[in-house]
Amino acid sequence: MSQGSDFFDAASLVVAHDETHAFEAVVPPLVQTSLFTFSSYDEMVATYRGEKSRPVYTRGLNPTVRMFEEMLAKLEGAEDALGFASGMAAISSTVLSFVSPGDRIVAVRHVYPDAFRLFGTLMKRMKIDVTYVDGRDEAAVEKAMPGAKLFYMESPTSWVMEAHDVGALAAIAKRHGALSVIDNSWASPIFQTPLALGVDMVVHSASKYLGGHSDVVSGVVAGSKAMIDRIRAEAYPYLGGKMSPFDAWLLIRGLRTLPIRMKAHQESALAIASRLQALDVVEAVCHPGLANRLPPGLNGTSGLFSFIFREGVDVRAFADQLQLFKLGVSWGGHESLIVPGEVVLEQKAQPNSAHTFGISARSVRLHVGLEGTEALWNDLEPAIRAASAAA
Image 1 (cartoon, rainbow, N blue to C red):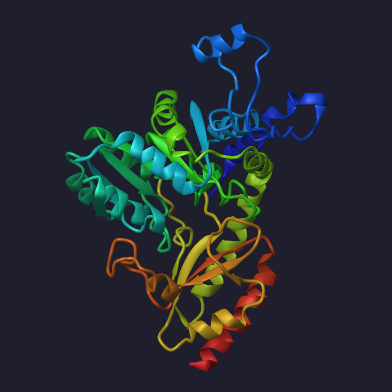
Image 2 (image 1 turned 180 degrees about the vertical axis):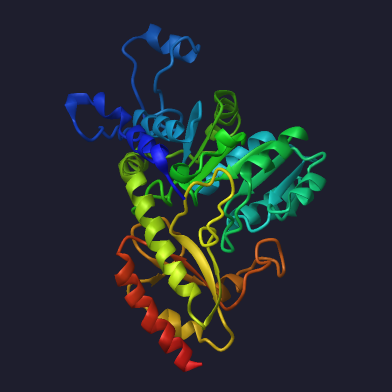
């Protein structure tokens, strides 16, 4: 998992805008306004005719939001990017801009739960079929792809962390004329740049690693200018899921430290995953970095993984014993979190569905934050002992 020069190139990209701030400020200004006025009648007419491009209303264009979009586009190697009020706003606006009633979507199994629910509700109402496949089985993907309009990926996948050869899957989609989209929230553009692997568009829950401080809910999509323009024209203005200037300002702050934070998350999570793997009470650890055979294009790992206790371990006692690890959803921030698998299985997802398939009631999802490896292990180890003794 060598980052090489790419890691440092990414670090330099996130500060590329620092030369042009107003008043020579180190931190870019926050343009917190709902609208922008015109200096003259002629300027207003020229803008509405499309002869001049400039901010009019923050739901359409805002300088702070635009700065974040440009920074993220550079990190992903994209021509353009578009920010949203949430990751789900980015996912739904992207998908709805490119599918129509009667179309079919192919998706890898274990996608983000709310994306799964979107496909099972709104897409179903629109008479759009969704076929789920194991992304590790390229033959199965090839078999499912004919006639599909869109191929939706996530790698590694939610909860069970199945990592795919993204480039190979994107090539399959391209051969069959399907548009490929991937959720890159887990790896971030520091450890995976899917557009360079042939994927058409990349979405993020920017609430996760891009923000990094658990104080913003937002999303973003990146891709070619033509595709982003289509989303901007067909879904973005009307669904209303626009990113606020303040959220964009927080995300710009988050991007500045993204390379350093991702390196710290990776190192600490790998160390803890290795220690968990060595325990007799742990049946399996789902972390793509443990095998030391990451698929092509995935150049590092993040702080999110899961593990499965053996029969007899009291998961409730384990969760309640923890101090540094908090019980909470989401991930990607500075804090460490856990979600027990039994909680996920009790949600209203369909039993044995593509979402819940393979998730054990004895599993626990960890997000390893930035508190430090030894401090976190000193929290986990006694909790595991207490849970084993309680069985």
